[in-house]
Length: 235
Image (cartoon, rainbow, N blue to C red; front, side, top):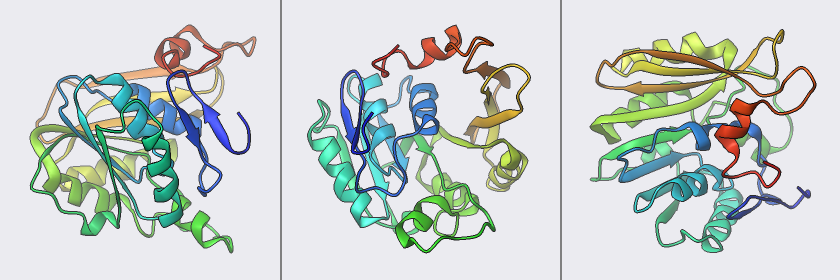
């Protein structure tokens, strides 16, 4: 990876115009989200377009709609999409999620939302927008997603482990119920770093899993390789 772009097996993501670069969180969500039977997918806060591109790669005919509030990131995401094999299946809107309306109901809504709450902000307005929850908080995400979600659709996100309970409680307010969870650890003996969560308006059998990214010898774990091998060049 250079400072300008990140090359995956089937596409390249340029991120020099984006406040938030390609990162592990986005790759984890894009690889883990359940796309089975999904015909219409919504990526909220697409940034570089990474997750939208990953989900397009994983599906044969699904239409992916991507939303990004930051104009520079939206320009770059649009360029990344245009140079991908799935440019005809991904549509991008440069808008605020709270004002996004669609008669279409989505089978899957995904988001790698901003994660700094009540943290000291820097002077870079674009970076603040990408990293802080002011403009896309969990309340807004679940409230508006419920309106856009098909009856048996899912909302799937990745969040820091320390806000997991807050996220679950907020989703429950809007009758979105946790039914699948993957806890991410860097390696055994380390604290949980991130949590992938899947919610549905239908109560389902609960599945609770975990994944270690590295073995004790600092090599990637077989589980992490299995999850991400379709994307990373080094896998």
